[in-house]
Length: 275
Image (tube, rainbow, N blue to C red; front, side, top):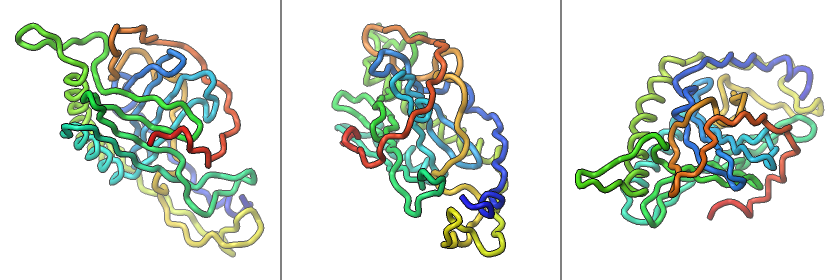
């Protein structure tokens, strides 16, 4: 990044806490190591996002975070995919490719956007609905919609609800909640997008020529922005996430510190992505 480009970067707005900082709204699921991962909703600088904290000691990339950054229309399109999964009477699966301009070793952003993560909505053959955010060479964790260990549902004949029934009604609940809350949160927490001032001579990429061109203010779709800090589980307590048969240990309040960041795996390694 050239000196001119660095000085032209607007200050990032300070993060303002909102409804999605409530840890009980997160989805939870066990990772491959038997520890609890979490999926958290967020809003920053007018843009919704989903962040998965894998809580996997072997997943040191970006301190175990996998992000799905979205603009508002894409977020509400994602909710429509969730609605279709709920209404489906058969297997359903759809994914949204999230793209960004990754930085190279020289600190400059790539000219072309590349896929950095996928947001996957699925209804399996048993009617269980899940959400996941996956990235190349990263853990794949399905977050099933459902209650925590403190709530049970019983039919009038005394039988307990099936896993599919619980998953579908909780997916409906999240769909309703996210539709209303995100609309309100974007309105209440709206911030004026900041424009980048073009320095004399234009933006230069890595001091080697090539004007970057006119940048309009605001956040690029799916790019950069705030990353939640702190522990993987986002605080005490549960939130959503089905515990599965047998009601295993949820590790409700682990205090494991985030691992040190490691070099990001090659972006073209897509072999472990869901079909």
